[in-house]
Image (cartoon, rainbow, N blue to C red):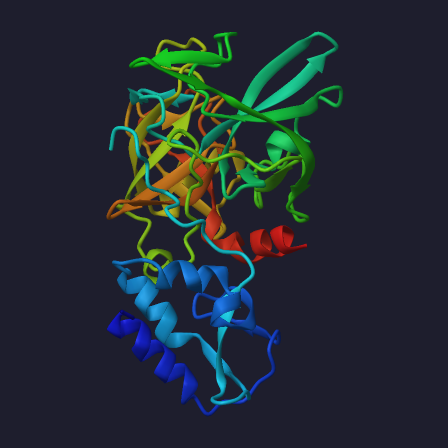
Length: 354
């Protein structure tokens, strides 16, 4: 039997008097580029209709994104604005357990969107120097300086997911009797934000995307993060907000940790970072986030490109990308600087659609 709310949606769409053509370009209520499509042809909408417990955000989408109808017998067929790029269903929800300075060692699979970038630094040597986060089956998000500001002889070799200890050579590990293997993917291309300036002190526009050659396979240990498309998430204040930053970099003992760690830090007003970095004549812009500043809790060397995430309910959203920080990691009143992902959603979408 058809659910009553699905029937209401169909009736609403059928009696919509707006006329349009299928496949016309449209913009969704969350400002994403889309095409007017029949409901049956929109995978994103079908996933909502098949959800037995749609969220308020999904209800809002269905109610605010009709874009007309096409004439057909016996009744007109409804059209809805179908986004070209959208969050993968069940993104940002870890199924396991419910380089960071301080913080806690992560359980394998606790941060399933976190990955590392592997560089070939010589003919026989590979090295992990940056982090990244998985957005969907082909794209990962990282920092621009992880692509442009590395030695010219280095080459991005691959990205790895379901990685926990980067110092261990074995590809697989046994956990509770189950063999879990890291996933390795070659890179088809990298795209750095066009306004990023190499070796810039302020590190504005420090964001980049990596596209894998093959599709990334999702499982309990590899799950994409959600991008902050919803208006509710975009409008949340940064100052005082609690975020989680993840990485494999330097620890509070000054050693290379190798093991994935995460720490909870607070968002700060950008003025705090402006004061902390005034000697370097750095003034943050709206495209950057200031966070941290508590002693012993910070991102650090080796964490670059990793994710700054916000948990809302059970879902995690990527709000920032690790960019740079104080020379001495974890210094009190010296927060870290993160690229503000919300300000780059249009660019991310444009790159992934192309």
